[in-house]
Length: 128
Image: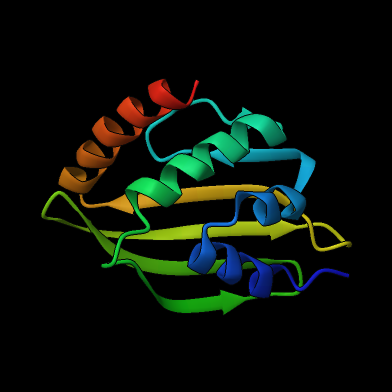
């Protein structure tokens, strides 16, 4: 079985998209803080997380705390986007093999959500 959180933290540290792709289940569902409809499937989830790695995972990024269960975790993070403080959580659920099946990102305050929406929108257009 995969040690999901250990691999996730390695992905965050190295930004290794190959390692991330191997961590995601084919049927993974991604919930964006700025898109109403859940995004279904590995390819679209990988694209969103790749964008998030570029927008959120700056020198300011750090996980503040983790609440971990047998097959899920809440990871609270803080970072900065264009001078705006961001506080958020990654809510991650994985299957019996350790592959991520559900990934939800929530962000606050509203100013941070707006900055994230703008930068992710621009970046996702470039990644298409």
